[in-house]
Length: 399
Ligand code: NAD
Image 1 (cartoon, rainbow, N blue to C red):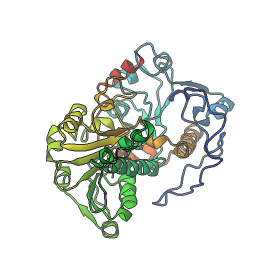
Image 2 (cartoon, protein in one colour):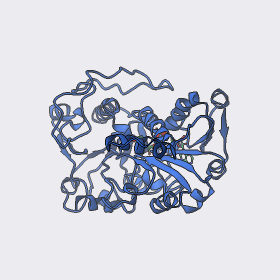
Image 3 (cartoon, rainbow, N blue to C red):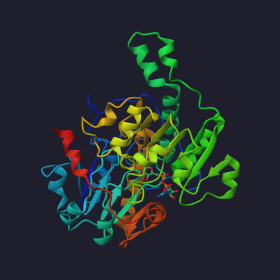
Image 4 (tube, rainbow, N blue to C red):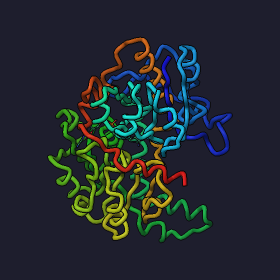
C-alpha cells in the first residue's frame, strides 16, 4: 500500500459547485504536434467538473481506494506545522499543481525517505528541487501539453487587455463612470506592433500562431531553433539572444520554464534594454522576473504594462508589490487551470499513476527527472539545479 500525498487549492469560497456555467467542454483528441491527450484506462469524473480543488481531488479518490492505497488531499502546504509536513515522512508519491505548489525543497526531500515520485498536475516542475530529486532517485513528471494552449489563450487576452487599456476601462463602467478620454489616453492597437516570445516551445509557438492574424511582426528567442518551414509560415524573426530581441519589440511574452538559466532573467539590466513603453506578459514563472525591478519599471513608466498569472512565492503574500504596482493586469495563477485544462491534467495524472502501479513506462515526454538525470521534457527544456530558494516565504500568506 502506498501513501499518495496530493496538494490542491482549496474549494470555492461558497462551497464546491453544484452546477456549472456550461453543460460540456469540447472533446480534444490530439495536440497540435500530434501528441495524444492523456489516455488512462478510465476516469471517475465528468469532463468539465472542478477537479483541481480539494473536493475534486483530481478525480482520484475511487481509483486509489480500489487499489488499496492511501490518498491524503490537503491544501495546507506551507510551514513546519502544515498537514503536508505531517504526511511527508511516509509519502511515496507527492502530487501538486503549479497553481498551488507544494514546494519540495532539498530539506523536505530529505525528510521523505520513501518518496519515489513528484508528479506535477500541470506543466512546470520548478517547485521541486530538481537537483535534490536527481540526487535522491526521485522521479519528477508533469503532464506535458495538458494546458499549453490554455496558457496561450491567456497570453493573448492579457496582451490585448494591457495594450487596449481594458481593465481600467471596465472598472470605469462598474464604478458608474463615462470618461472616454481617461479610457483612451493609454489605449493602442496591437496591429503593426513587434511581439517577441522568450521560448517558442508548446506555449510560445501556440501564442505566436494565435497572434499571427493580428498582423503583428513576430520574433522569438529559444535555445532550440524552430524548423525553417515554421519560421517561414509565421514570418518569424529569430534572435540569437534575449537581449537582441527585447531591444526591438514592443511586447515581450515569457514562455520558458524556470530553471537556473532563467531565474531573474528580467532584472533591471534586461528591462533597461527594452524599448520605453514596452509591455511584458509573463505566464511562465514569477521568479523569471525580478519582482522589484518590474515594480520600479512600471513606476518610472519604462514599462507601459505588466501582466501574467505567475508569482513567487505562491500564494503571493498580501504585501507582494505586484498586487499594487501601476498599470498591471495580473491574475492569480489560473491560466493553466481552466475546467478544460483540468480535465486533461487529471486524466494525465491518472495515466501516470496507472503506469507507476502497473510497472509500465511513463511517457517519455512527461518525464522531467528519471534515474537520477534530466529526462524527456526535462532534458529538452530545463537545466540542472534548484530554483526553490525562498519558497518558505509562501507561509506568509496564511498570517
Ligand atoms: P515546453 O517544454 O514545450 O517549452 C519550453 C521551451 O523553453 C522550449 O522550447 C525550450 O527550448 C525553451 N527554453 C528553455 N530554457 C530556455 C532558455 N534558457 N532560453 C530560451 N529558451 C529556453 O513547455 P511549455 O508547455 O511551452 O511550457 C513552458 C513553461 O510555461 C512551463 O515550464 C511553465 O513554467 C509555464 N507554464 C505556465 C502555466 C500557467 O498556468 N501559467 C501553465 C503551463 C506552463
